[in-house]
Amino acid sequence: MKQQDSIEKAGAVLQETIMNIKTVQACNGETTMTPVIDCYSSEGKILHNPKGKIEFQNVHFWYPNRAEKKILDGASWKADSGQTIALVGPSGCGKSTSIGLLTRLYEAQKGTVSIDDVDVTMLNIHALRKMVGIVQQEPNLFNGTIFENVALGDVSITEEKVIHSCKIANADGFVQKLANGYNTLIGAGGIQLSGGEKQRIAIARAVVHNPPILLLDEATSALDAESEIMVQTALKSASKGRTTIVIAHRLSTLRDVDKIVVLKDGMVQEMGIVWHGSKAPQ
Ligand SMILES: Nc1ncnc2c1ncn2[C@@H]1O[C@H](COP(=O)(O)OP(=O)(O)OP(=O)(O)O)[C@@H](O)[C@H]1O
Image (cartoon, rainbow, N blue to C red; front, side, top):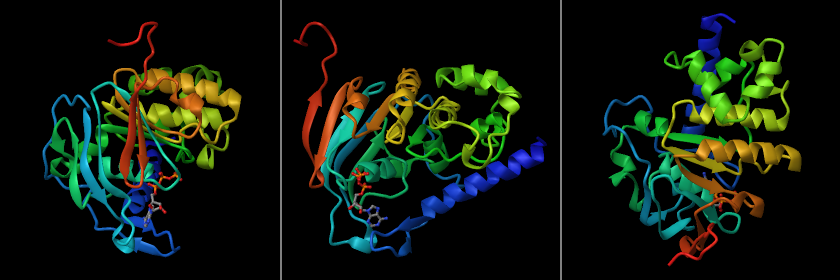
């Protein structure tokens, strides 16, 4: 695969991502444009050596095309650096929207969303997105090699880094067994791979920049039980040393979290610390 092809494909994926940011499907089926955030802006603060502490303080948010419905209505919660937090609550309570606010797909009308005590709206958007690795239900893979799908055309990503992140994602084993290893073409949408393999490539992509924050939005929801176990193992190692926000419906996904935040009616209804030890915390 020529480098030019690789860059073009990565460009197509980036373009699609930018369109996802700019275009929002309204719930009434119409497509509306959100206020556009310039993804290439050099403005804003860059955090050096970010720790990944996350805090939502009295956050109010509604979609401008649906102002009558407050999605978040004074939500406050925080995740300390390195903690794993589960965001749970009924369908439509604003879990994915919260992730969108953290990555600045949207901006809160009131209240603050911060990373390391800096309001995300003050951060350089490009640096912010690099601080956050995201794994979603449907991995967004393209018809390129495994290497290209993990590195996404970033020339600073070496083969060594790709292999390292595939090891973290429990993917190196199956990749090494493919005829052309990391140079294997995976077909449109990763059609040559199983659901669990695709998701492990998506995890490798999410950690390749070694981000301090990992967001898992229904990352195992579409998998069968066997693949789920393998992907869970991958996610556990990927979340080591990172602040991780998990959105999931399955209880099995919540086993390893440190704290559960329950969202309802736009607010945090309950918050619980999960105790993993043999002795109750004092
Ligand atoms: N772009 C949008 N414009 C208008 N309303 C939206 C938009 N995106 C989401 N919504 C609405 O905002 C509410 C919260 O959506 P969100 O996806 O954050 O919920 P969720 O808790 O993640 O739900 P689920 O568990 O079903 O994934 C829903 O009522 C949804 O219909």
